[in-house]
Length: 480
Ligand code: BGP
Image (cartoon, rainbow, N blue to C red; front, side):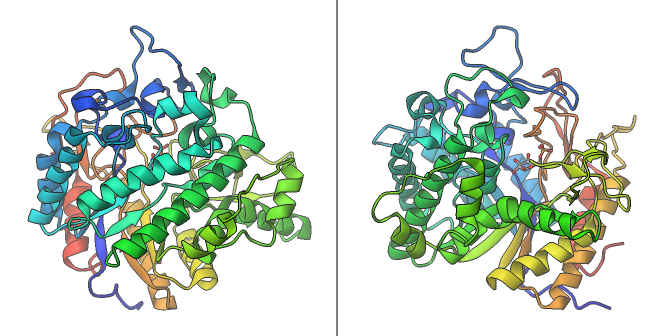
């Protein structure tokens, strides 16, 4: 039998402000890109609007209202035994347009209350500095991260929150799923390179030049923030966050093998290599050439990247995909990228292929390459939940998904991987990033909120809540 999890393993859950907090215009908060996104469904994509349409639902605006429920939510996390809670700070709560020189005190005070509440329950905060909610004013000003000035705006934001929360927060992640910027869809979620765009998120014009330039600016901003943190707050632990997608060759045809390697270079390694190793990977030039991209760099950028490498590597893992050169094979959807259907795997109701062993494989691949502590900061099953007449929710499918992934993490630990924590996604139900739905639920805690915007926002425990509590109590030994 595999060895267990190390002592002090950080069990918990993960959320993001734009999908969880709501209160989008409360206490001086400005509008983020996510506040300009309408609801959608699996089959009908969400839209970005420049102005706000009367009568249209913008789900991030209320989300599931952590802003007014944080005490109750944190009490539920404490009941499950969380050691760590991943949340993000809403940039526009602190700097409403991203460009102010002084932070918004009411915004800062909110996170003081949240961190104090977590500390009171002995829960360690893990803070994502930027999670899919760039200030919309920066999209209008400089096409989001394509504008180099965003580096300074971001650093101003980092300095303000580091200073304010230095005694309350130790673990920081500079950008959520920074590699979203390597994919067309990342323009809205992450790089904000959507100036003047209005319409379905699937119709965003593909502009690799803007995205890869924006990514360069994010890399420099991340590195400078890490360097600054190391110099001023040596107690901080600074991490990167990558959407990791295990991509298998569909067959042993060498063309498929090479293709899978190429896709992983772009999606999985390009960003991690910069943030962990401190330099662009050897294959970067090939990618730029093939995508017709020329990166404008300034003196000092290369040095900054080298000096601002992260202390630990975190990633989201939901699924794997297969890669083939055969265009006749059936495709599948996935987190940020799709691929080819793998005949050995089942899929979720949203078409994401379920592959626990792929998590063990990924942990080994990542650790072999970087040799620094790893944390799985998102994982989980987006599923429809049914509330029974007595109010109970029997989510055995979610328990099964999580159990199988935890078993594979345990195997990876036995393989020798230095895994320090696990925070399943959307521990309390929240809005889906890809579709804007409520129906795609991940939580241990159910929230009475529905796709049409109705609901009381009342919280209740699903079966998985009690199960996960046992998992944490036993440090991952009891998965029954
Ligand atoms: C990741 C994001 C999260 C989250 C998750 C699940 O890409 O970091 O913000 O939403 O995916 O995705 P979805 O909500 O689309 O099911």
